[in-house]
Image 1: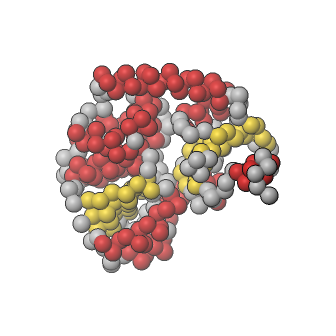
Image 2 (image 1 turned 60 degrees about the vertical axis):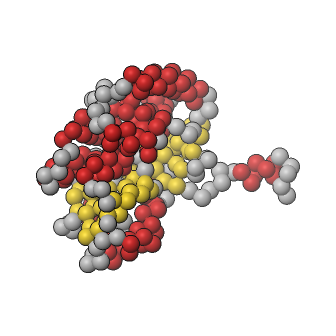
Image 3 (image 1 turned 90 degrees about the vertical axis):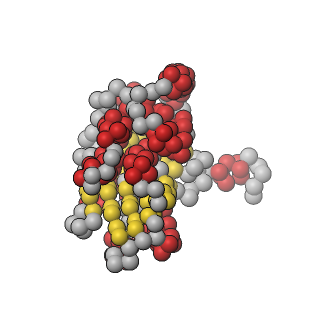
Length: 281
């Protein structure tokens, strides 16, 4: 039995689609970066093989797994470069985890060519190349469907061409997104960090990459914090010359140079707000 641990974004979902199309005896779990080590440590004993995609465990845990089960690690983040010397690791920064998984499965003579267009679409979005006209809409579909429906859809129909119903959903969502972006300009707060870099901070619950890109350009920022207070998750986006992955990693998160994130247990001032409202001492 195989345990598959992957990220809970579209790239992680793409890896899941490919692996589920090939392996029937596979259990997949979708995690944040900071959940990986504890989850694997508490669950690996129930399996004889582990495939890890788009996230990476700490090296000490990885050493603990060696000789206990068969390991395949596929990742593309700078933070996991130290693991690429292990013979079970596939690591390349210039490709998404979905594309690396696709190429690995092809090298294993697995029948995954039918997912080629989907793989290229996910790769274009995840690396923020935006050369594929459908990649932004594909991530919008992922957000609308949720991870499980998205995976089920492409296992049933591998085509990256949107159906008529999907096109209608996307059109309606794009209208909503445009209004959301325009409204966000009224609520962003602008700061200067200790390195004299101009950055923004905003509370938002969706469209992280697209909203970040919009506000970076519109407000002439170098980077931005996008805070989902409900989920206690922070997304970071930046212009090409500014790295934000180090901020995420310092907070037990991860990601890429210009797109990263982390989870937090901070309550975003809830107690202070309730004290000011007169209901707490």
